[in-house]
Amino acid sequence: MPEMKTLAVSVALAALMFSASAQAAGLPALKKQAVAGVQARAKLAQQMNDKIFSFGELAFQEVETSNYITGVLEKNGFTVTRGVAGLPTGWVATWTNKTGGPVIAMGSDIDGIPKASQTPGIPWKQPMVEGAPGHGEGHNSGNAVNVVAALAVKEIMEKEGIAGTLMLWPGVAEELVAGKAFMVREGVFKNVDAVLFTHVGDNLAVTWGKPSGTGSVSVEYTFRGASAHAAGKPWMGRSALDAVSLMNIGWEFRREHIRPEQRSHYVITDGGDQPNVVPQVAKVWYYFREQDFKRISDLYAMGNKVADGAAMMTDTTVEHRILGTAAPRHFNKPIAEAAYANIQAVGLPKWTADQQAFAKAVQKEVRAEKQDGLATELKKLEPPAEKPESGGSDDIGDISWTVPTITLNYPSNIPGLPGHAWPNAIAMATPIAHDGVVAGAKVMAMTTLDLLTRPELRTAAKDYFTKVQNKDEHYLPMITAADKPAIEINADVMAQFRPAMRAQYYDEAKYPTYLDQLGVKWPTLERPK
Ligand SMILES: [Zn+2]
Image 1: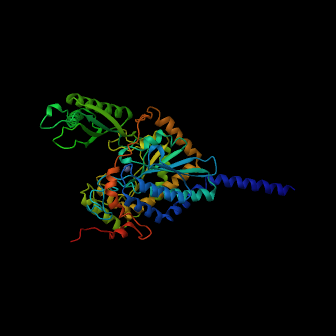
Image 2 (image 1 turned 45 degrees about the vertical axis):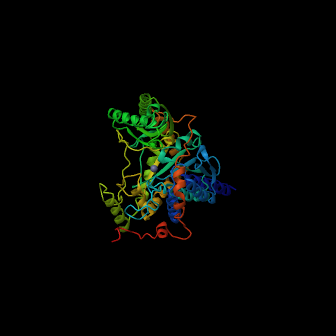
Image 3 (image 1 turned 120 degrees about the vertical axis):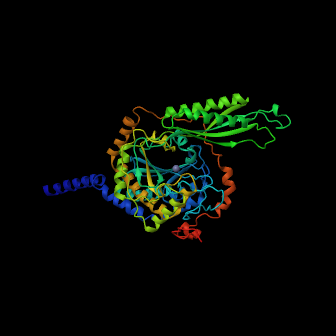
């Protein structure tokens, strides 16, 4: 029966072609489903964004935030491991379809900024709780991006039979660059094929190579002297505070003779108890930032020398403790190119006149250099600058030297703000943040599909990581096996403010948005007369 044989062959052939097309020609259709899947979850994105905003938790104390996000993930079929890498608020959530697929990890930070409490939607300083922390960077939004993207992709993987593992994880204590190096040391990323990190920004953007910014060492110096009656027997005392003061003066003089690309700053965390007691203990906390591993180590060594000099001058002793580290970042070119194609397909949100008017009111309030509202044009994907500018650090750097990694920025905040302060919290639970999160989640979901279904992209990403990124420079972890996360930091501050903050947590069952719960009219543009 030759006809039957032909039929069987052609059916088999058709099946083969179908499975091949699901991986290649079918990708645009899968991405369309992903965009629709994210859009269908815009409500969840808004709820998660607003809920985490209302928690406003500081580094290492992201207890409510982590409970909430892992709860949403568990309800949606993810398996959660808590307390990873010695971080009580650290977790890893995974969901696997079939066997043998790649592992794609989505991450974003979760911690807030001290004294950044701010009523969202109010374009002037109006703390929700005076002196309390708040999301003065916008870390409340990143896990809304990732969870919504992951749920949209999971649905497609189940429907289309795509093999792979989705892994979500939080950037704990990013504001202290104090979580991710510990996660790397613990091996959290050892089976991961690619990391898609996402961070709030004011455009929909991605970069590859070395971005502007720095890596850093965060270290606290503890000086110990001898106490004595400060008026009765001062000659019997040795002031640890004198040592701190001299270290700071020494560093200010030394600063003139270091590359201008360095960034260093300090706060005195313990200056003694009361003036009539010679301080027996005093502490100062430094950040040393530079642009490559060697220069960061050199700067840190310079700081240690100045500290030793101050101890010698005051006849005190000094010890130091690393509180955090961030490797300088390097992002993956092939993954960034794939993400950028998706950015172009999604485009910036079509901002409304209200959103633009509100953004301009905030820019006016903070006297921003440009007061032209929200971004309306995408940035180009350009090769990295030959001499990148200096600036802040992010401990995603440590992960970027462990696994092919990109950072996707999404437009949930307003351009031209100071950063790390209350003005950066204003937009973060408003329609600006909500629309930015949805745009970011679409790109995130599409890029995850790229990585799941295009083995050649994963190979190219690994090749870039091995042959280009690691050609002349290699990861130099700046924590040792003995260093432990400084999980006690901020516990006292949160204990002080949490009761007042808890009274204002967002109740998504009762109010459509957090602005509704707070009775903030949208858009509020001017102070009441
Ligand atoms: Zn950040």
